[in-house]
Amino acid sequence: MDHEAVLATYDRQLRRDARTDSPGARVERAGGVVRQVGTEHDWNGVHWADVDETTADGVIAEQVRYYTALGREFEWKLHSHDRPADLADRLRAAGFVPEPPETVLVAEVAGLPTQPGLPEGVTLLPVTDAAGARLMAEAHDAAFGEDGPGLGERLAKRVLAQLTETPDAVVAVVAMAGDTPVSSARLEFCPGTDFAGLWGGGTAPQWRGKGIYRALVAHRTRIAAERGYRYLQVDATEDSRPILQRLGFAALSVTTPYAYRP
Image (cartoon, rainbow, N blue to C red; front, side, top):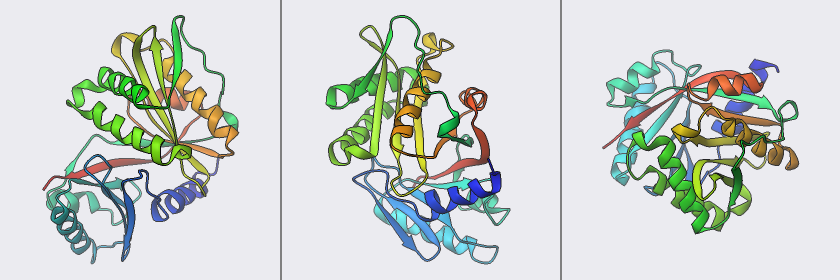
């Protein structure tokens, strides 16, 4: 895979030409800034900013004023290859707080396994309705509960809205151990681009190390291949990065969400 070519395609298709990832949100282009604005349950933030040493501080201040007037927390999704080189320092000086960095990983769909191998007693349940979304929320909280209460519920509301209003844009699945949801994941499509995105995949602690995460990747890879997507993209934590790289994903950049809370 040509790293520079794929990175340029990623920046163009997923950031500069970004599309909304939620029925309740919209993508705006203001000067050199591409940002998403939605409800409190949606992701709100800056995808891309064409700034340099002379313009960065003013553009940062304008985004703070804009989202604060809307009463929204938001993120500036900074990538390690973004310019100017001191953009992270400028964001911190403006009151943004960095969250844990994630590695942007990309793989060609054609080179990935597509047959999920699940441990005995675990099955995959497609999420298609409110009941499935509730199971997804339970699995999310079991995996990421330390991140704070209510995250699973907000995720479920967002996924249910996607399934209701834009059903072709997302595939969601829950891994069930009997009647207990132990992991969940979703595949989000970016129509008109070469990319589909892997999100979620967290597994309850007692079920980790049994191949469920890999199975969820293979399940979603098969669907992406059926729909004709060339690449899968993941913002990977340090827990999932080694697994994905063993499967054939390559690192493009490192992304750090810089959060601003009015």
